[in-house]
Image 1 (cartoon, rainbow, N blue to C red):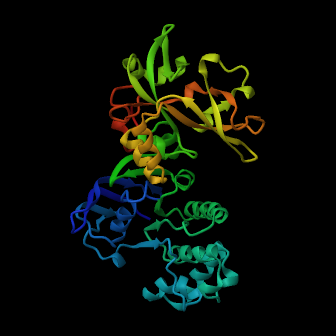
Image 2 (spheres, rainbow, N blue to C red):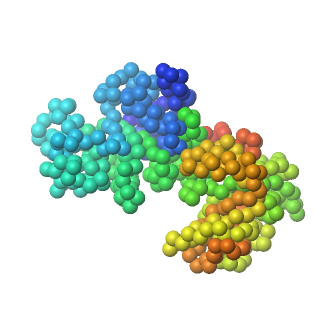
Image 3 (cartoon, one colour):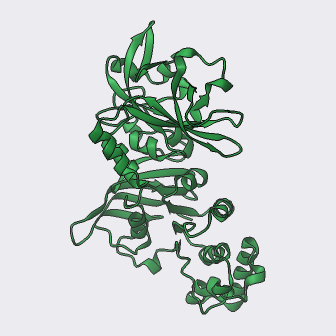
Length: 421
């Protein structure tokens, strides 16, 4: 096992395209680090530079105590698992797993022992004589995992290994990979576009955007304390709702005026976000996670000054919950961060149209309890868990916490540490 450190790492292609800029990242010995971000954010390029498959333009990459910038990939003592499995079609499962060991000229006895041990752990014992074409997608991915595990490398590098699997199998395989990583304790860097994978698998998650690192933190910290609007909007499923609001003084406290509604901000939130005081009389962006919205009919005791009202435009019953899309009178957030998040999910056109037309309506997504009886087309009151609201500076996009710089000082937290701010 070994730690992996990227210091000021950058990548510029011959045509001048910059894929990665000033990447500083420390992956601890035995840590499971996930790189996540939109398509084209530089996460795979960063992984390939660690692997030795891309030349490093700037900075240094260290594996253990060695700087490996000029070390060939084969000498870096890493094992890679690819999106495409990259199995040899003419070899059996046994021979695919054993391939790296044979290159190292291990003894036949040692190869047999290690391949059979890995096959047992991965449930592949019954398939050792088969060729890849006779396996399912999940079985092929386990073979690719086995080929990496059997080498006992210093680090595993995984590039979207589950993206070719169906949804049910992905859930199973991500649990399996997490379990294996815990069992073997090998330093792992895992690249994915799927933030649910990132949140459920990583000890820490590094969010990238346009080749730059935005925030590195444990999953729960990313969810509860995003450093900026981009991270807040990228982490969470369904995504965070974002609307413009005015912060006003009310009854000795503060309220967020969202369209024609006023949401009183509870003392515990103001104690946590002391910098909101300096925003009184100013406009901000309010982030509301879908799970912090509820059908007010199911929350009869919710304060009347912590409710919104709108029209249900879509109702999605999922059994355990109802996802309700509610149109309210409020100015949508239309910053560059929001545009980029929309671009990533193919909705940039809708955001652009809203900006050009000066739309003053926003559709919120709420995760209502399964007993909700809301129907499409009806007006509904929505209870807001005001203590869980997020606030972002309208100009900089930074989260508003305990000082004007938000969490910028806590951009990277080491294992077991939280971000400052």
